[in-house]
Length: 385
Image 1: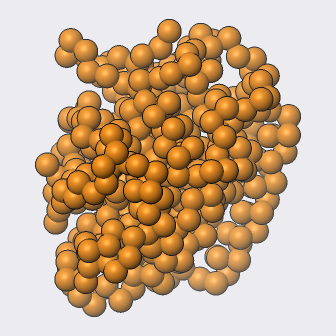
Image 2: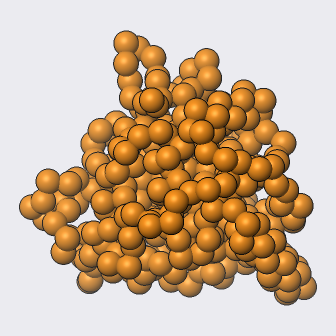
Image 3: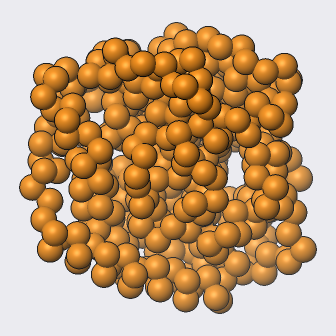
């Protein structure tokens, strides 16, 4: 099973967890899905999130595969193998936390721990029909996570059940509150250019929830996406440039990493200006709305065959990546598929109000507990009331 790179069975609790292989587990090498790191020494200590997971009674059952160096959106990996998308096997699992999403969707674990630098939790969650939370930047410690330095990357969970995801966050983060005393009064529905069937699915779900909504705009979404690309390119290049000399990187990652070397200081300064301006825009909207709602993906995922043939699609993170730049928490929610293709909704909230967007998620799904997308009678169905 290419979703899991090794079986650990650490801990004794009932909740099974898989951990993305950019996160240190003592006694095991952290290879980040790359042949260039295949000879890495075993980690000497657990990453903070691993220690918290074990200390709260969860059981780690495996290290999860990923897009090499967490630097890609398809989840395809020629060295370790590409995790199969359990609910949509013809489609990519999404990257970079492909194994974490696939393992959860396949029922191999209740929780997948991933990382999200530019949509790398939310995109595979959307592709595989599960829930994925990118917490507020800095909420969960990145100690023991590769790369060591990042201004965008967040550690977060994936789950097929939203209540399971909430319970995990409550366990590993004492500051996370699973219930908010403030009722949800109004959603800001961000106008975006997306696949019509995706927009229709989201509109239908909002109508069913009976939540009040208003239409809003975020005029700097494209600029924020581009700025986030500049930042991740510079930071990933600085973290991984030494691996180019090994000659062992996959073709897509090697090409991107070499291109990232040309990122200029001027581009980075402009990206930081955009970061500040876009963050201000998002904060202003969230002063008037409890949460913002928009698609997780702008279009349906490509097929595995297309990805293996060399097609790339960084634009699949068009609606996810901007909120890495701003640092706001964002939750991807699976909805009813459209003709066998995954549809998902993204909820973005105030910085620090991670529990609040989970509450919005529950209300959008019209229930006190959620079970994501299940396989029933050969078809995929969203469990909505």
